[in-house]
Length: 553
Image (tube, rainbow, N blue to C red; front, side):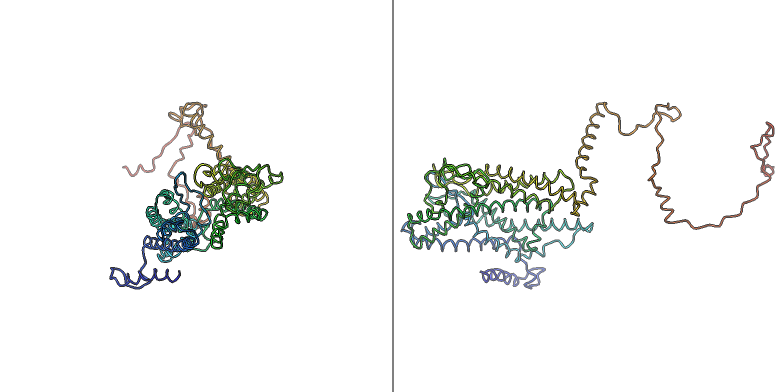
């Protein structure tokens, strides 16, 4: 695989180096393929390798299965492998009398891994590190870091689109070619699923190429990073608890699983393929376990329910892993303890969020904790929607958990617990002063209640402006006095401004810093005797003497 990628990387460059292009020296290091071209080559390589792997598995199943199971000969095998590749991206199919939407999520690991490796090759082939801006604003270190982060995010998005667009286009062509009378892929599901998976894998691979794993989350702002990490932690704890519950149920009911496997009697090769199929559906079962812990539970057909409050089952499909389902009827009282797990996950998430991005105010941390619950509920609901679906029509039209019920339950459970734990942890940091970020933020806003005071000031200012328009409030600034100042009455006078004690004269401070040069004082001049002091009236008569009268003669 590595050698094949190296050939794809070096062969076109050798051809380009032989073509005389203006501004190109012909050196291999100076020739760089455009990003869309590298993305198209990576998408074609992913489709080719993935179809080759699934065609091999399908061919083994065709040899071990009865004749006619995959259609007439090898063309039917290739068509089945192509449809299996589309199903690996969670693209549904229409069949006579219903649809197929319950697809194994474990099969998605194959295209996700191939797309990730192709994205790394695309980023290295296009030399994305050289595409980062060399000139950044010279304002401040914070502005420079923000500009670099924005440039990296734009580059990551461009790389994801360059891989996802041709990948979805090729998948749409495959969906049109592999249609037949029995199975017809939904073209909209094919395009959207391939586009989203390729964009996520390509963006993640590009971010990993630009920097190490630890620096990937640093591309996000601090507050968004705290929400992402806290929500991921809460969701991971719930999925881990669901996996433990599923494995425990399989161990406890292992005899029923063996009996269902014996009823099918698939043989050696068929048994291996059946085991592989159940392993691929294991991720779906883990998500169902998470829905069970959250409270809503899941369904295994119309009119069925498996939840902590009770179990109601009918005839289930003959899949051996479904033998681990509990018996129908009421559940023991101790089973309700599992509902406390989402609250514990929310408490852990709230503490993590505060440790990453503490709030300078008491009321801010609980709100961000509830935002973490919203993000966790949305992610859990999306996983619940992907893990379920239909297996035909009528009775098996609803299999799996209800997405909206899981979203609502997880949001409330995780959000409330995260809000309480985040508020307590943030109060402890502010009270003890153990976190420098909290101390600086609190000093910057003045006190912990600064947001409330600012909001109150804005409301008062807005109310005052409205009242002043209708003439119900006095103006904030004193109006100018009409006419001359001598005509003003006592009621129109303004108070004399009082100089504060802490007021400093900027001119006096500047003079103190730069004292003027000392000048030698001149001796006082003797008074002139030719000028008469006019302030002496001499008993009511003032004598005026013009000292310059001699000059006018």
